[in-house]
Image (cartoon, rainbow, N blue to C red):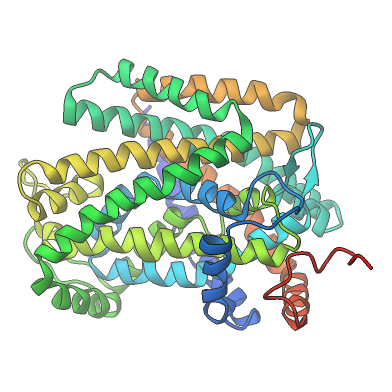
Length: 469
């Protein structure tokens, strides 16, 4: 199997390398930021008001509220990548990689806005009366030719399969490994518990997932961020120099120090962008699937809400993880075998050194469990919507059942090859979606401007519906 792992690794490196997805993702986000005139900055406050204060629109079409759609998307994106992904980015790209993760988050807000806008605009009602939308629909219906159909179907195929990798087996295995290391719980037992817990939510469909994530996602994020906040407060004197290092190394690279071997500017850029996108999924297209389920009277409204997900994921959760790693100096440490730390072990080392007693390892382990479980829920929905596009509503329930069963398989199976395949499939999802965003950018810009020209865009919940005389 070594030749297969090598071949898959080369394919993944090319797709996520400096000549394909990384520039395409970054430049698409920058392009959308420019044509939308910095919408994510100009409407930042209103977007958060809609997402966290208003939360829902009364009597609007859709399955779940603004807020619930946001938490479903957050559930899928605030995952192991926020712990292991940040650790990998800094281990391979130095502290400067964190800066480029921030940049991908800022321009990614425009990408996420565009995905959500199109997801709502081109959504349709399925055979069971639920909303169904996302790239698999807006690519084939927005680009009205065979090319658009090929893009839409390609996304649906990649998405339906990818959900079993990055959204299922990888997450289940991360949970099983974390609880086995921290508490000695057998892999099969944690797999069973995780499978039944997920089934209780997933089999109920999007309304069940939305209700659960609305309560669970803020809870899990607050626990993790509070732990990181304590680490930063205990190392507050080191914070200014840590920030200075992040900004300076983003453009100069990082010299060898401690267990860190040293990298140049391109490494910081590459790993910061790659792991930033991997964390917030801006450009992957999944944000449009969650947005399509929202109760809203206009695509712009949910698009504004959806773009806050990228900010919360990358500019908040990722920032706390990254700064914790830098201020504690964990990124320069070696493990017991004399190797440089990377991934989740690097993040755990930062929390261990920054918190007294066993609190560091406990918080990271709980974070892995919570984040991975929430990702299972979000990706289960993404996968079933792709199945609906390919085969109709009839196979949605069987898909949910299979998805739940695979959770146990993922928990008890070695997944080195699955990780690589998951990376490849995620990249293959992003490619048709990014092409579609560029082609349909004119439509997004035109209708966004029309929305904000209305004198009552801030206050009216139902201006699109006929007013009663």
